Length: 308
Image (cartoon, rainbow, N blue to C red; front, side):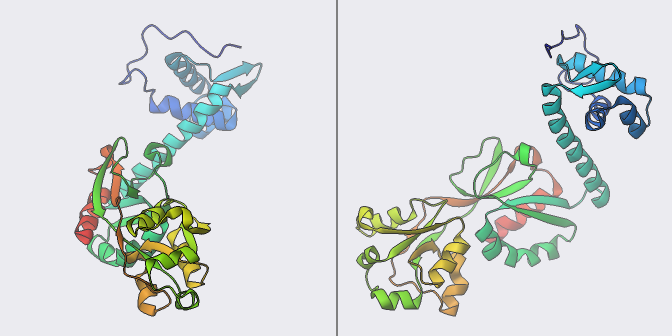
């Protein structure tokens, strides 16, 4: 059956013509979840007829059939099933936002932050006590992401991004660059007699999945041919790369600030002083429409001060 419906000539006035009322969306979501207008009505404290009218009005407004009605049963169309997933997520976001602003009375709140895993554990989290002391009303929830994503789809308020300052529809603030250094265990340095840059061509070079050209850049700056290098195991995170270097699996190339603890402890050493400056940087990123949220604004000002 064709799921398209002829659009109404004059849709009800509900703000933008493409935006249904919250009541219609709630009625549709409940009916889609229960596959019953009667059970949806009981949940929403409405009559079955009211739910049916809300859903019929929604179908007429968007011009798409959402349910198939056969005798006393209703089933979702393919379009209805897909729409139900999106509507359910939107209603949950609205509910969470409402509870959040009620709980914090418009000040502070929850910040859903996507971070780079090693940057988060090695640099950000150790400094967070200073933020929580200054902003006790803000709670930060963390998720790890190593590549750009869709803010609207994933629901994060902000992210720490490494790379170029490119993220459509978002504001970016530069936090800092980084110095890249080769590191290895003392045992590996001794065993392979690593005393000058050309010696790296004799040992496995540990790879980081999101920085596939890091060694190529360093070798080129050292006047060495990357084609002569011996690729070693590849890892998803810098923390794993550093641990592999500690274990003696090969020579790693990492941002210096991420391995300061290992360098101080002596479990990693820099065999030759040939640092390389990364051509990219760390950025704080957030959707433009979230710039004024109290939690985002508080975190932005604190983080920019920390990295100044």
